[in-house]
Length: 227
Image (tube, rainbow, N blue to C red; front, side):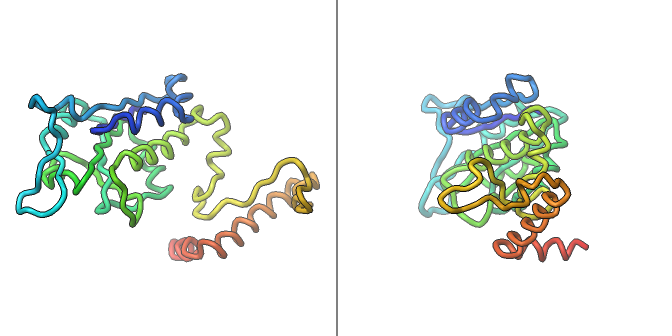
């Protein structure tokens, strides 16, 4: 999979790319992740990427021209251009799975009051991380890239582990434990050290259901509505 991230603050993303689990994916040639400085597509000597909004009001608006130029230069027939935005579909694991089928993702990262509204003519999809405010789209682009790329076999050494994480089946994952068997009077559930794999599997399913019902009952409701 190829990913291009266009941002006016590339240093916010390059550290993540160079130090996350995705570095292993790129070293194995399973991923091609590139971070681009939006200012490379500006045409004035000050490399301007924002301006005051038409109609007045507080804040600044990111200019459409450099983004449009960058998208044209990077887009191929296989590209999907994504803009993190509160207007988009709320991101979840099903969206991650759908993006896994794409060959090339291009993320554009806005700031301030957002990108000039005409950007909608150059993108394919908006995705929201949730109903809260961030300073820019870089964190969302990194988050989506991480959650999609970790599903590629070989990026994580044990793909079975990734496929059993929370939300893969619509539920929270069960609790997991490791040595020591007892810590400060808190013991590991006996079934997990019983050697009975069927009983362990049943315990994990039940723990997953109970935890989800207690902490995220909305997920249980969502699953029931799908049936």
